[in-house]
Image 1 (cartoon, rainbow, N blue to C red):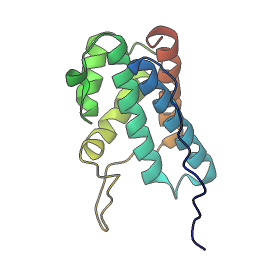
Image 2 (cartoon, rainbow, N blue to C red; image 1 turned 90 degrees about the vertical axis):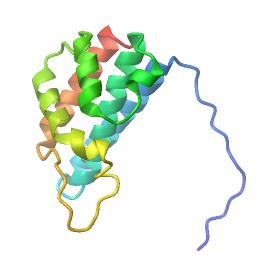
Image 3 (cartoon, rainbow, N blue to C red; image 1 turned 135 degrees about the vertical axis):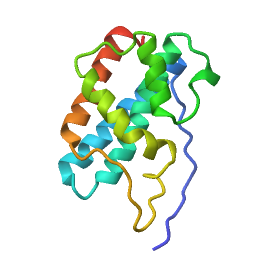
Image 4 (cartoon, rainbow, N blue to C red; image 1 turned 30 degrees about the vertical axis):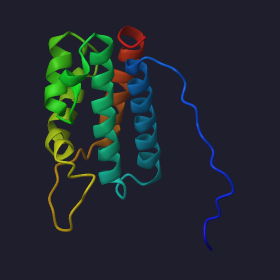
Length: 151
């Protein structure tokens, strides 16, 4: 059955700062990863890791944007570089920092090369397999950013 298009609906996005917009999108990605984890973690490991990678990127970019780092210095998908910039500015002082750093280390290469986005048959990709602790670290970062960084 073909999809019928009755009318085009435009969604007007609320006006927020760039930092708040990046932060909000990151929160949605963590929530989606959590739902996939609850439904069938083993089946959705690549998808969960993809979402966690982009959530990490956007959380870090939101913190850097709020801290006044201009756009060109926070572009790209290099999680290691974004982490180092945010950490160097003292933006990552939170309880799960050690687990978050480990997650960044695991995901950085696959995220930078879009390996999780474009999985190739037979390829080997580094992923986080302890999804629960990784999601816990992302939620702790979310809470930290909400309280201390992103306004």
